[in-house]
Each structure stands twice: as structure tokens, then as C-alpha cells.
Length: 339
Image 1: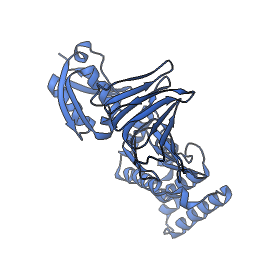
Image 2: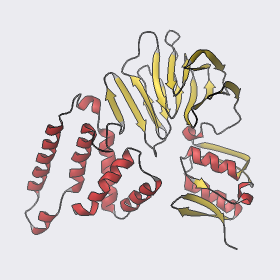
Image 3: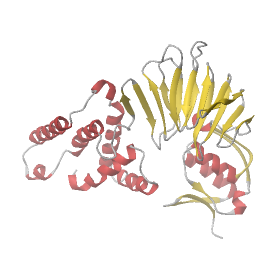
């Protein structure tokens, strides 16, 4: 693999694994990846390397000059291992180089590839990330509680909880299954809200625009309060949703049976409009599905999907209504067949 054939994709790969790519850049990257088995192997190897890097064990401080010197020395060693032919003089072991380069970039914090990729250790706190295209990332907290992150979300927690509370910080959306401990309340800080429990399972969505936070309780009892006004709070019972926005703090019965489908991947539609179906699929699969035809949007649909990929679901819907899918630079469009 010649270096100059792929060097242009280094920044794009870095942006992708930092979940900073635009939709157009993702399509460009995936097009390059699928052009050859070699590109696919390279892409998958980089992903694998990033997943196994453990910053907590590898180092506490980074010597930038030393890191780059080690990289250059390793590249020289790899070059010396190659047969000295005319071809190898102009060729490069790019997968190996990318492997070392990716590690160094993460450790040193250059460009897009800062320590925000996968895991960051800062003092006694750990921050875990789920990338833009990574849903359902499971994390075990120090007390045994489990967290499932939705895409483009992150959670920060200490290496060990304090003696009187278990506090974490959330950005985005996550499902919590909290280990019961009556002596240590479990507290989630997110946006301008605080969620407090003893032991229960619930979903927190802080990715809604306008500083809005929604908490859906599956089991147990959850307290939702406004951080700027500790006296304003509500208790949320199983099956209910607590909603905090700029103006008020409210509690209501949940009517969305797909509210945690992003986690369970079980989707139920009962006489739902296609407009509502599209809205649900976009949330569950972090997709960009569109339809501009009012007749299609108002059509009603009933079905249940379990662990189906988005393409299969769209194919079933299209077959039901004699529609088709058009892939564009602006997303996926559901349209009628030309008459």
C-alpha cells in the first residue's frame, strides 16, 4: 500500500473515531474503506488498536518529544526489516505506521485525536465515551451499577465512590441499572438537572435541545431536581417520565412504548403514522431518514421488530406501502415509485 494513496485519510479516520465527522465525510470515508480489502483491514486494525489502548495503565504523563522519537525509531526499524528492492524503497508499511501513529496521537493529544477517543483518565476520574455511531456501550461502575450509553454520549465517574454518595456526570443519554445501597444515594449530574436514587433502573436523556432533560423510570423511585434550585424537585414512579425544562418540572405517564428501544432494539408500532415511525427509527438507530410526501407520512403502520438492522426494517416498510429508498448526500429518503 503506497503511503500517498492513503495519507489523506489519516485526518478523516481521526475525526471519525473522535465522532466529529460530518455525514458527507463519513460517506467519503466508508467509500474509501469499501474500495478494497486492504482498506477494510487497515480501518478495522486501527479501530481494534484504539479499543485496546488503556491510558490508565499505560501512562500518567506524556513526554511529547520522547513519544515522537520512539515512533520515528520504530518506523526506521520497520523499514530495515523490508527487503531492499526498488519497490520497497517507495512503499511503506502503512498499517504498522498508522498503528504507532494513532497511539502516539492519542497519548500526545494532537489535532482531532485527543484523549477523548474511547477513554480518558484525569486524576482519579474516568470519562467513557460512546461515539456517534456506537450505541449500547456497557460500562460497569465501581459499585457494580451498570450503565448503557447511547450514541454520542459520555459519562464521568470516580475510581472509587465517596463514603456517603455515588456521584457521576452524564452528557447525552444513558440507561442506568443502579445497585441498591440505602446508605449511599446514587446521583447523576447532567445539564441543569440532578437525578437521585438509591437503587433502581431508569433512562436519562439529556441530549434534547433547549436544556431539556427527560427521565423515564423502569423500576424503583427516582428524584429529579433542578440544580439551580435545590428546593424544586419531583419523584418519578415506575412507568412515568419526569421532564425538566427551562420553565417547569413536570411528571407524566409514559405513552411512548419505544422510549428505550435504542437500548433494547425492540420496536413496536401500533397504528403509528409513518411520520412517527420515521421519528422513532431516527432516534433508535441514530439515522437520518426523511420523507416529504404528506400522503406517505400520514399512512398508518403496525409491526414489531426485534434486533433488526435499519435496512431490513426500511425494506419491510417499503414493501408494505410500495415505496422505495433513495440515498442522498442529505440522508435517506422514502419516496413513491415513479408512476
